[in-house]
Amino acid sequence: MSIMDKMMDRMIARMSPEEKEEMMLKMMPMMMADVDMTNFMVKMTPVMLRSINALDIYELMKNILPNLIKLAKTVKNNMPKTTQDKISKIAKEMMPVVCKKVMPTMMEGLTMDNVMPNTMKEMMPHALSQLLPKMSNTMRAEFVLNMTDILAEKGSTGMTEEERKGFKEKLVGKIVPEYTDIIHSRH
Image 1: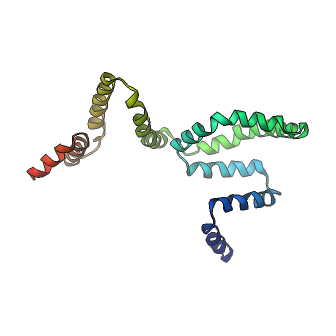
Image 2 (image 1 turned 180 degrees about the vertical axis):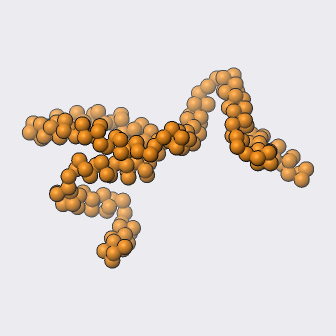
Image 3 (image 1 turned 90 degrees about the vertical axis):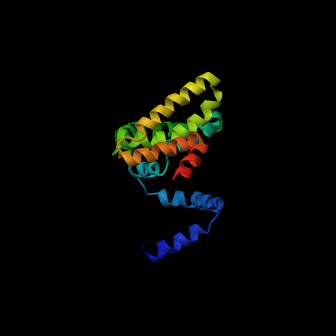
């Protein structure tokens, strides 16, 4: 790491989010002046995506969508015709590039084996916390019993008998906390 990098790291670490945003707004046009945005986006998108998960995207979209269309219409209505034409031209040129270059790069290395477990780990608890209270008592009880069976059976897949026993004790202890006290009093 160069001296300049170290100085920048220290300086940026001390800045407030507002100061960082202001600096970016001032510096980005200068930094991007000679950059081929097509190639830059192909390289940058996968890097950016590694730092976010499905729940982040869900929360972002949930917060943004209600106002996004309103914002787009306001911007378009207040934009000079020449700027609208330029943006339209750029969008038409970028779409094939995004589809051919950016999307495959974003998806590189992603398989159902590594995406689905991480996505489910993030989304399932959130989804359950939102949906369970909305179910009828009967439906909720049925669902929870079914899920508990699946968690007990599939949650211990690949474990030794001792690991499986410990896992199931923890599972039961989560469901019925008093059970944990009974088990520990026996040992």
